Figure (cartoon, rainbow, N blue to C red):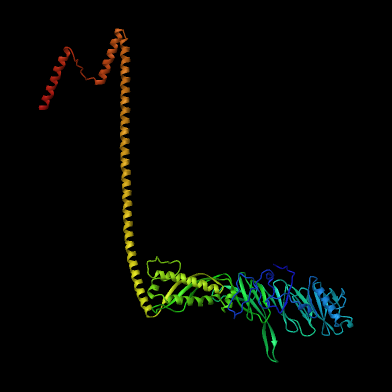
Length: 567
């Protein structure tokens, strides 16, 4: 339940004040006695043991004399009520009867109060206006001491105390009997007849000064702020004493309070401790935590000392159980129990079995063939089971446990270190040789790949050239064939044309019936023949008597040419 802004919280002598959600959340669990050693069953109804740690609003504040809370009517109404109480008790009134003017004097504006010292008693001017310094009888044994704002957080004047705190603020006040009380989101006016009301501090609850961190996990558990009060113990010595402790606990965290043998769980929120019999036992986180923790030296069965480094992951679920067992942090409880359990387990393990496995955890399970693997499995399961069961007694849920490293000590450890160093050197040398061989193989494989690629390129180029030659030959043959066919066709066409021309001409000549025309045509043919063969050509008839004469002439000409050759 979230309370509205105008609700006020008063408390006097309360252990815890101001956790608004506490009305709906029952953080008051059973408080086991330290000497009992027993815890209540969480399934049974919870019972309150002893007096409650969280008190309700202090009713005795109403019984304090001349103490008036500031209600919804504001500060002026509270001053008027206090003035009536003083008048009814026969004491001087608090509010001044002076009437303001509007032309001269000390000015009081709306929202301000005027303070007057009347012979050591306070007088308050509440009406705005100007208050002149005359007539003299009005200011006899009186002096104007200044002005204050109606909304000022603290006003202290000649025994009159006004306190008004807003949300997130808390005022710590000491009354005339040195009793401490705290107010939040409220206000009051009071007049001390004997002693004074001292405002020790105005605290911003959301920004407390001191951060509380877990020393192991370094996580922030909350914030605190202590309010002190000076007390004069003798004529010369003044000491400061803590009178209130403010707590700001973040979500998923809690605090443990202690009063005598009673323990109280305080949930997240803003709280303040004012009861001197109640102390803050510690702050805790309810979230998961993890850490790597070294153990003390543990001896194996053959008396070889070994130091383990373990990994722990846990979550605190019941802080009351942890504090009941006397531990301040979950780490302290787990450390002692882990050391005890690992000591018992390693005491049954030989050195040779531990050397074979560097880490013990769920990620490196053995295959069962090694004689020591069964024991290592038992180490994992037994350590985890026993630690989980033991952690529950402290209100802790163990989430994970693993041995991540071990260091052997003594002479055998140094001997093993030398052997390990030699083995590592041999491994490094073997790895270097393997690396060099691998590099050479890769180089040869690379050269072979390059040669194969070049051969493929040459084959491809030869195939391309051969294809080009074949294509060129085919093209040349095709061209020759086409040219021959074209030439033959042209010759044929020319022969056909000549034959057709001769035929037409012969037909035309045959149709000539005139002898003279025929004779003339014969003469033209002779002229053409002589023109074709030359004027000196002798035409010999190839048949009849003329043919013999032509033969004789040819023989004579041959004989003459032979005689000329011999000469």
